[in-house]
Amino acid sequence: MMLDDLFQVAAADPKLDPSSELLARVMADAEHLQPAPHELNTGPEQVKLGLFAQMVQVLGGWRPMAGLATAAVTGLWIGFSASSSLAPQGLTGLVSDDSTYYLTYFDDGFGESLGDLAEDG
Amino acid sequence: MLMPLDAQVDIPDDALLVLYANGDQSAARILTLRLTPKVFGHAFRMLGDRAEAEDVTQDALIRLWKIAPEWRQGEAKVTTWLYRVVANLCTDRLRKVRGVDIDSIPEPEDDSTGPAETLQDKARVDALQAALNELPERQRQAVVLRHIEGLSNPEISEIMDIGVEAVESLTARGKRALTKALAGRRAELGYSDD
Image 1 (tube, each protein chain N blue to C red):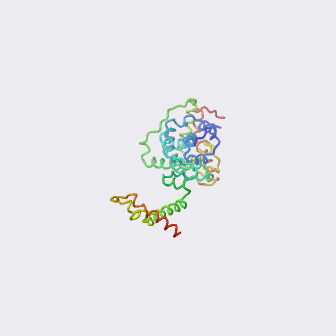
Image 2 (image 1 turned 60 degrees about the vertical axis):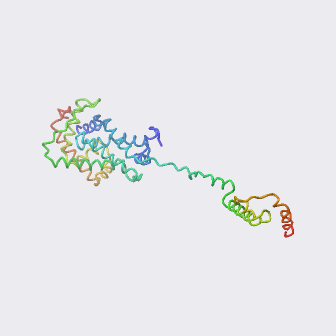
Image 3 (image 1 turned 90 degrees about the horizontal axis):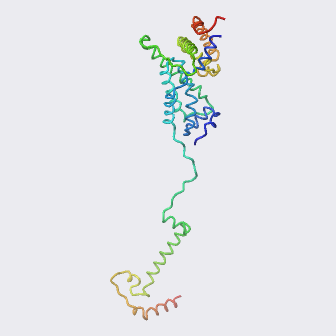
């Protein structure tokens, strides 16, 4: 039948293959409008630690660090408050720049103060 | 993520479209090569003009690329959606043409002959296209989809948003009109009277 044959010829018509220019235009549009690829989720992000944070981590975390700091401050306080028996004007004199001390200052007093401490204890 | 071409041959269009939306460049290439000929062929048969059909093809596929991120796999057939878009774009263009003086527009000329196309085949294709161009738009669309693109009546009914019986009616009337239009050219096109 003529019409069916014409349909077959039309369906196989090579003239209706899209030109390479058209394919290039369509491909360029596809690439231009394509959403960017999703980033792969590789788990929680690794945070780079600073020097202080690394030190805290080495010492076992913030709790041991707090205990260590408290001990240091306490030691410093004891040192300054109880040092009058060790040096004239206590240790505060040592940190002032216009003071001069001689070992004779410690001569008798040093021994006595150690004795006092032993008796008190 | 890139997949080898042969791995994508059997992947349905909608799955490829999801891959495209996820940034797969090979999916973009496969979809372009797979869909462009269908869209262009249909647009050309509806419009009868190569340049216009190319513009419609590009436009329809741009719409597909844009809708890809929202495409819900398994809900609609990509080609059905595309044929519907092409039909709307062709209708718009045909209306514009009808709005201007039809005599002022030169007849589309397409003297190109494909490598495997004989002169007689070219004459036959041109005669059929000329007769198709004379059909009412809906008849032309139904006949082209059914008898040249080879789609099923239910699929055509979905594309044209009408019932299957209406599709059958359109194609039957279209075929009758084509037979009548081409009746006087049987001998010229190389067909005997029997």
